[in-house]
Image (cartoon, rainbow, N blue to C red; front, side):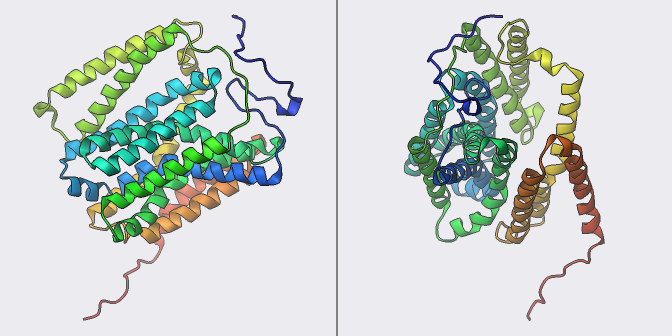
Length: 387
């Protein structure tokens, strides 16, 4: 075991104020109005991280048509988002330990806000790709940041409940995007979407700068091999994402470069994982992923993700294929939004180690009951059509 090197001398915190991990903020006492402000910033930051990409996905056909993009060009937009969203987490873990989450949040949100304003000026396909990449980075930042701000909104004894709320807030972005999109596009074109996105980014950046997280413990975390690993894994993940998003819209026999991208992704990712597997202080703990408990958790998480993806992706694709527009799908997403809010609050109020099994069973029962109720409910024929 190597000795922990503190970059700053930790303050003399009370026992209940100490941060749980290096890089996490401390938990000092706050006045009620300050706690309320932390909660509001948590909501703002969490929605900012999710709404950017959600608005794009909800209005992708409109944006694609107005910019004259081919399906392959439109696919690069989601590819840029996913690449930076996935790989940013490699950097966040040790960055927050050494420099703190506040600095990373200010950098990520600052870049995001700057690029939203740049796209409003340029309005080009290139600036949109850069904006989607920055949106992926900001989403990774805001997911952690919103949870950390929410933890400050209540005393430490409620930390598990606030953890559930903080993680759940980002799930509100997709239904909100579908509810807000028709109103944003009613009195303008695509510029309204990016004006809204730029406003959220600037508000979040200002909120994070004005109301900072309490200080934590900063230790020396980065090593030279970290940068070698990132130099392999980040482009490797980018190539893999490119193959996945382009392979969906391009025929493999007409795009042999996809095969070379896949080969490059396998080589780079394999080399990065090999380095991580033989390090004493890795970015990715590869041995942890081979434990049976971890494998069971991953399989369960994947199955639950498939079950819950229906409301955000499966039903949207079906309704779009049937010719429905975002304004026609607003009532559906109002129901989804209300259900998500009720689910978050119910989970937070009943959360506890003794209730985890009961919550999981209740979730599975609800997921199973919903399609059964849909098939047995009487069909709605809609209002009568006037002649």
